[in-house]
Amino acid sequence: MSELLVSTCPALNYKPLGAVEVSTAGEVEHKVADANAARGPWKELGVAGRAELLEPIRDEFLARRDEIATTITGETGKPIPESLVEVEDYCDQITWFLDNAGTALADEVTKEDESSLHRVVYEPRGVAAVIAPWNFPFGMAVWGVFPNLIAGNPVVFKTSEETPLVGKKFEEIMLNHDLPKGVFAEVYGAGDVGQMLSHSNVDLLWFTGSTATGKSLYRTAASKFIPATLEMGGSNPSIVFDDADLDIATQFVYGERFQNNGQVCAATKRLIVHEAIADDLVDRLKTIIETRRIGNPLLDPAAEVGSLISQRQAKVAQAQLDDALVKGAVVLAQNEIPEGLAGAYFPPSMISQITRDMRVWHEEVFAPILPVVSFSTEEQAIRMANDTIYGLGARVISADVERAEAIAARIEAGTVEINSGSRWEPCNPFGGYKSSGLGRELGVHGLRELSQTKVVSRSK
Image 1 (cartoon, rainbow, N blue to C red):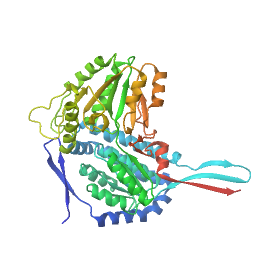
Image 2 (image 1 turned 60 degrees about the horizontal axis):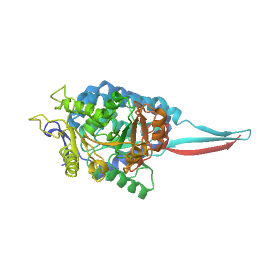
Image 3 (image 1 turned 120 degrees about the vertical axis):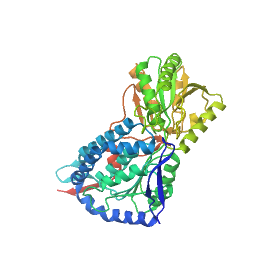
Image 4 (image 1 turned 90 degrees about the horizontal axis):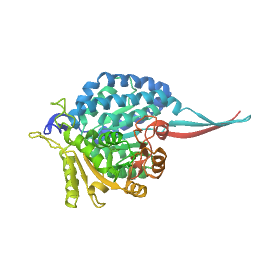
C-alpha cells in the first residue's frame, strides 16, 4: 500500500484536509524517463507552439481562482484575499511569459557582412527538476514550471510537502489540457523525494527555498555537472532616512514585513531607520501591528492575519524571539492571539535594542517579527544593511533620490527598491547576492538562463 502524505490546516488546529500518495523511487524514475522522451518533440514545437498549448492552462487557473485560493488558504493559513491575489498576480506573470518568450529567445544576429552571418541561438537545456516551496505554493509553481516549459524544457515538478493539495490541483489543471506525454509531471513527498528527483536523469535544477537546502542541491548539481537556478533565503533591510515620507515608509515597511505573516523570502526583515524619525515611524507601525484582526481565514472572512504554515515554523519563530529578549531586546509592539484560536498562530511583533549576536539579526526570520535599529550617518546605515550573509533585496526611502540611488549602489543585494518603487514585474530578473542564491528568474535574463546558448556561423 502506498505511503500517504496527509495535509493539515495550520489555522484550524491542524485539522486533516486530505492526502496524496508519496511518490516512490520507481515513479520518479518513470516520470523523468517520460520527460526525457518528450524533449525532442517539445523542442520542435518552438516557442509559439508551446505558448499556444500553455495559454488554455492559464485560462483554467483563472476560471478556478476561487477554488485554488481556498485550497491555498486551507493549507497555509493565509487570508483568502492574499490567496486570491496570489492566483491572479501569478497568472498575469504567465501572460508575460507567453507574450514575451518569443522575443527573449529569438535568434540574435551578432555579425553580418558580405561573406558571413553569425547568430546566437537559444535552445532548451533538457529536462528540468523543479522544486518549489510552500509560502506561495501556486505562485512558485508558476515561476518554476512555466518559464521552463516555454523555454522548451520538460518539467518534473515537486511541490512542497506542506502544501500537497495545492500541488495536486495544479497538476490536475496542467493535465486537463493537450500537453504531449512527459512534458509535465508531478511528484509528491518530503525532502527525500526531492533528493531522488535531483539525482535522477535531469539536465537542470530549479529551486526556491531555504539556503541550507539550496546549497545541498548545488552540491548535487556540481556532482552531475548541470546548471542550477537557486533562489534562497533573505534578510532584506529597509533603510528609512530622516527626510522620508512617513506615509510611504509606514505602508511599505508594514506590508513588506507582515505580508503572508512574514513568510516571504524577499520580505523586509530588518528596519534601519534614522534616529530623528525612529519614534514617529515606530508609533505608526505599532498602531497597525496591534490593531490587525487575527483569525482563522476559513471561518472568519474579516481576518487580516492568519496562521503560520506549521507548528514547527511557530516554534522556530518563538525561539528566535526568545533569544532576542534574553539578550536584551525590548518589545515595542505586539498583537495578541485571540483566546480559543488553536493552530500555528504567532503574535506579530516589533522589537528594538537589537545586537548583532541575536538570531533575529543574523538568521532569516520567516515569521512576523520586525527588528528595529536606528542610525545617524549614511555609513552606519550601509554597514548595517550589508551586515548579513544574505543579499536578496532592500528598500531605501528618502526624499533625496540622488542619495537613495547612491545608497542603492552600495547595497549588496539583487534588487533595491527606492521609495514606492516595486521590483515585482515579470520583466525584471529576480535573485540574490551571497547566500541568497545563484542565477536569476523572470525576465529575459531568467528565460535565457533556462536555455543553452549556441552560436551558428555560416558563409553566404
